[in-house]
Length: 174
Image (tube, rainbow, N blue to C red; front, side, top):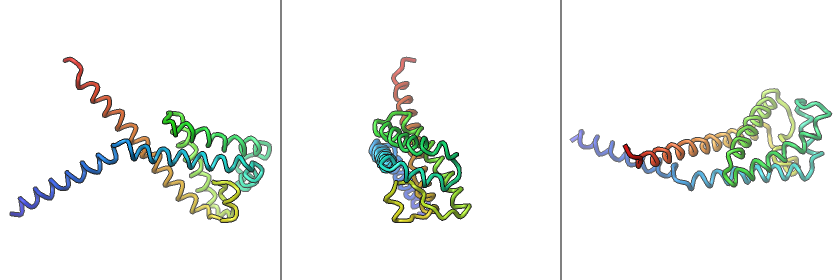
């Protein structure tokens, strides 16, 4: 009797795993996560581009960029965010690489700011965030979630490419 219950539970567990794996391997979660992350980057970059002087002031508080490079970074970084977000919407490989590189950079900088107890704005979403006074720790954890989304996108691409490669070699003559 217990063996039969164990087998039924094992079969149900296998069915649940197949169901969840089927959901994660479908194109919809990949599409939703990709477009959401892309739109976040486009929004964040465009908000900073609207007031690059304010963004330059925020960057200067971290004391990581030399003063003479602040204008270049204050325009270049948001521009890179917008371009990487646009490339990610169209599922172009440089888009995911650019977004993942920037998220890693942001996590490192925000972690540095949080560990050194800086009481500054993160500058993640431009001037309107200044009124909210979001903490660096909050932004750090948010970016860790974004990093998880990037990991999911890479995993989806890898499994999709493997599955397509496996399907294409099935029909080859032996």
